[in-house]
Length: 170
Image (cartoon, rainbow, N blue to C red; front, top):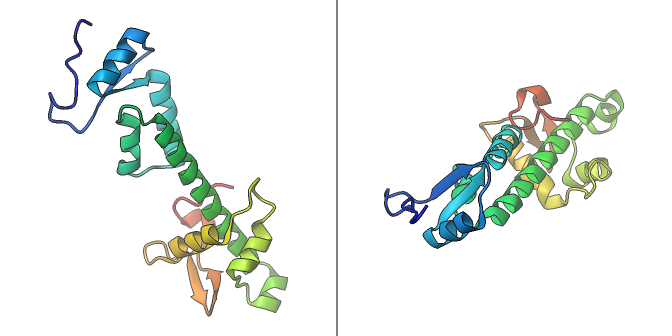
């Protein structure tokens, strides 16, 4: 490979990625100089499998095919996985409360942010904070999902977790 002619400018692309089994030091240096991202076949396979569990947006995936952005992609994916964990945990907690006869008798099965935090604090290594719970409730309550409804300052589940996209795990 005397001279790499795969840079994004040549093909009027935003970025270029070279996929292969592995890359020697010479290819790594030339790719860095030409702003070509390197992705091993194993990394690509892992990314596809991870994406099936935690889908990223096209903008987030751009980090995978942008030279030198592997660390940003790892941080993005961890944040997305954390959001999905919080989402699933909040939904399942609301479902449990909304289907527990004792909870229904005393609270009508509705939970506020602090109630949800109290119920979920031991489920993850780092408990979800109030902003994560509020973000999950906002998403679940959006018209496109309609899995949670507001009752005053509290929330009640309106659909089983199995019917709500991105919240089926657990």
